[in-house]
Length: 270
Image (cartoon, rainbow, N blue to C red):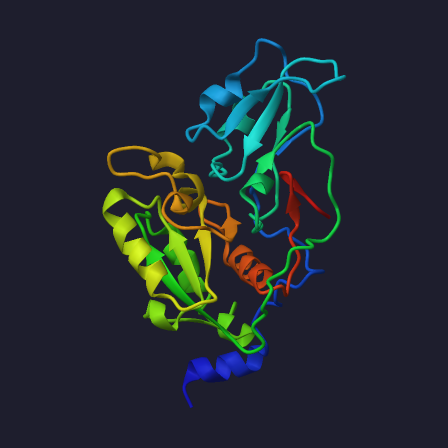
């Protein structure tokens, strides 16, 4: 017997617990930034100027509310670089420790300072749940390979995606889910649409990472795009740059109706 096999048997179970509905969302030391419930100085726009992906915008006070300018944050563009936190002089932007959770609506990635916190579980579940397996066709539509590195980690013994009945397939004709990474560059739009059309019904699409959601750093450039939604319909959005393996597992189980959505209106439920 190989030495590494004996070592593994001595340590026992190493696979992490699955991201079920009760699992804590904390997974990374520095994750998505959070916005404190206070106004910014009227003439301060340091965070907006520092953001490389235009994820931050100014939001005027809502009707019946007093105060200065407030900040709106789009997690679909945020790459968690922490630059906005570093330049904020009033601690309006605070470091967060949450992984990027998957959502079903693009609007839920947009943090609105005037929105009320929603804690109810997601009511929209997949009409047809898979009882046995989910097969994924992954398409790299112009990524930096950061997301691909996290996808590869899903197959190691620590995360062991196969135990959840989720597998990758090489053919779109055998796939239930089209998982898109990258900004969807112009040369990849036709290929992405061809993969989508080759999939049998019912079929779904997940946009993984800030690039696949909004284009992020390379949006609208010569070698960039604006994300998957410009080419094909998207059912689940998973922000991050890149998302962690645990976040990917949560988004996949969200699609299957086996996990609940934790992000509503840009606010993470406890």
